[in-house]
Image (spheres, rainbow, N blue to C red):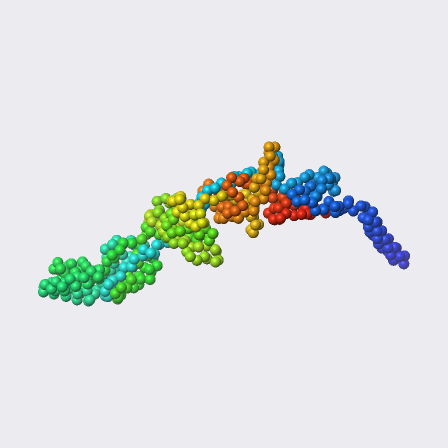
Length: 444
């Protein structure tokens, strides 16, 4: 019967201990001065922008000189855009001089080569008949044929009748009729047949249809026409028999980002290369057409490049890399790369010197260099033009406003200089007019 009493007494003692600890803890907090736990409010009073006092040990920034209220160390002065020679060395600050030069752009793109269908030629019969024989030109895909090579032998009553008429006109000596009939055979592309009749050979009801063009048989078209070319099939006048392409002349289709497409124009020379053959200097290439529409899904413009001399080096379907050298005129339109008088010249800033939020863009310009080596920087809001990249890896922006040729900027370490300006409450990338109050200190 005594155990419940003991248990209750132990439980009561535990709760009393907890309560006593809470009371003592609260009393201690109230007894200790607030400056031990919190930064005094007067140290956060607004001070002049461009200068702050920071603790090298703790996360504290104040507006007045003195000691750190947390650790007691002497506060160091932080001045916006002002660094000593030693600080510049530790921060890795490197300067670059704004140069003036032409806006040379290298547009790089890749795509697949295909036949230049502008040069496709169609072999057709000029009269109707029935196929009685197929020649080597109809053997299959990619067959190369020469001009004048036979395609099919055609049984044609119409051609047989015209030969008899020509033979009769020759016997009568009717020159007007002879000329009319020979012209008809020429329109049929059968001039040799008429010449044979004039030479005294007898008429024949089978004539050979030849190709007036040289070229390579196109695969897709041959698949469609192959069945129609079977022996015994009827053909009509002007029915396509073969489609021929020039394997030496191809078209390269590439997609260029819209920001680069505005620098391209028809006729610009193009340098080509491929993974398997490297540079292709023997292939003549130039921009043939720049599309007028932007693909909204990938934000590119289709550009067609016409190639010549590709027969032994490229095939349709080959992946080809293209480099197009372009230059801008003073009004930012494409200029003639071969005529320097049309080039524009602009201030150029290294891309590494540019800081941007996507809306606002700045650089840190050297304002003054002291005899001691101390450097002072001033913020320079920028208005930029296109981004340029050359073969030497120089990545630069055209400067529309904010810098001029001869100015020096921080090409390396600009972000650290901007961070210093933020700590000092001065104008910076994120604070265009500065921050009157210092950055909030960590509360202890």
